[in-house]
Every structure is written in C-alpha cells, then in structure tokens.
Length: 164
Image (cartoon, rainbow, N blue to C red; front, side, top):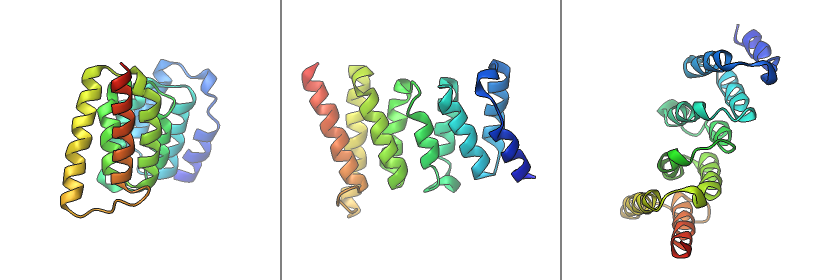
C-alpha cells in the first residue's frame, strides 16, 4: 500500500493545494511511518515554503527513531522562515548526526542576521552548554564533528554580535 500512496503523493501539483489540503498533508506527515512518504511530504512543504510545517518538521527531526535518518527533514526547513525556531535549530546542530548537523549549520547561517540579540545570546549560551558536555565526555573534535560545528556557529554568532 505505501508504494501506491508514495506514487500518489508524487502526482500532487503543489500549485493546486489550498490551505485545507496543506493541513491534511501535514497531518499525514505526522503519522506516516514510511520514510519515503514522510520525506516527500517534507519536500512538498519546502517547495511551497509552508512555514506552518516548521515546528512539526522539527518535532519529527527530534524523534529518537529518526536519529541519523533526518537529513531530508532538516533540508526541508532550509527555505522556510525558521528564525523563531533558531534555538531548536541550534539543538539539532548539537544533537544530531552529520547530515542533519550540516543542514542545521546552513540554516543557522542564513538566519543569523535576522535573530534578536536575546536569541543570539541564548544561542551562544546553549552552544556553550553543549560544548561543556561534549568536552567532559571526551567527544571527538575533528573536522565536521559536533564540537567543530559548535565552534563554527559560536564564531559566526560572536562575529555578528560585534557588528551589531
């Protein structure tokens, strides 16, 4: 059945969707167990910049069973206005695996100029907390490690802080 549903979803013309259709797709996105369907729906939300889907996509990204299988979901956020979820994106950068971490870093760079000083401060504090935890557990600090991305994000936000 999921193959038929997946094929059906691929035929959706996003230009024809109204708000009720988008809400229905979002409900389906939240309950489907099929990763192909979930990813395709996330890309549909990306295509029409369905900002209302952002908190639901973030919720899915953070589900333990999707750990290391959520890069497409992070990518789906990349063209949405997620500045109000900036701290959630910081957490994705700190808690997820490489592909999601890389996508989160790109999103953080895109929205870094649009966040408030309070959010910037909170993001820097959050990065510091994660860094302390990782350093005390002896985490890897090589290129593309979580610590590397934390350092890069902190440098970005600190640089922007001095320019404001």
